[in-house]
Image 1 (cartoon, rainbow, N blue to C red):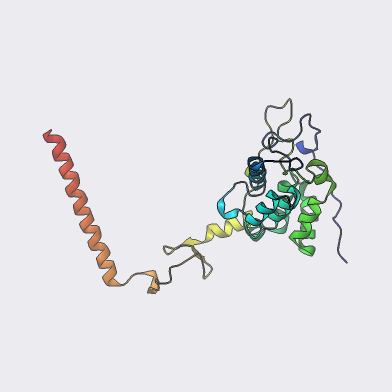
Image 2: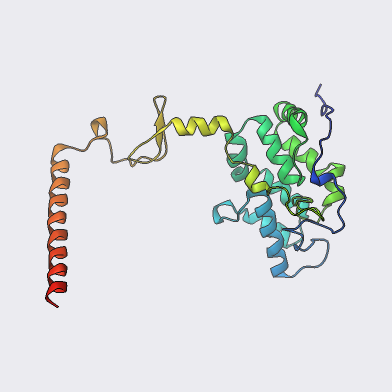
Length: 254
């Protein structure tokens, strides 16, 4: 028997205020997939979805199959957003480096476009993640009345009511308030010592790529290689000194 979402109280935030204008101040210019779109408009729609989910549009994060399906109208914008939220790249960036409560916050703020309703909602969704997995939470959010009433099948999620009429200062953008790493993981990464061969090491383990040809004891090169490096440094220093002297002499003689 699975547990349902625990009841939680709502908190005061801009997203609960009825707006006079549709959409938000940053992404309301995005077209809707409900209408016939040309190629450039579909590009804008796809770019907007990446910015909302990933906060950027790096080539390594692109999901080409999903993009192709959206361009050919095989899937809706909501299904495209679902595919991005469950893609290996997104899960690696969010789920692998955060606890369940922080993952819940990431998903709520990125998919529903609002801040999470305090610790109670974070705990409620973290239970869903722990019991049924991330996919269950993503599906629950995308099929919720809140998502459907604000974005529907054919609109990209966006931060709702970030700036309210009559207020000179709005809420901080989501990409600033949501760090990629939770505090615990930031502390763990900060405790690792960088290695000259690439990556980090700590706790008797090594993270990151190390060239396979480097297998020197104590991480130091052999004596002959160190002597070669020292010789190159000396020769380079002398050449730099000679060049500098020649330049100074030419300047003074002119």
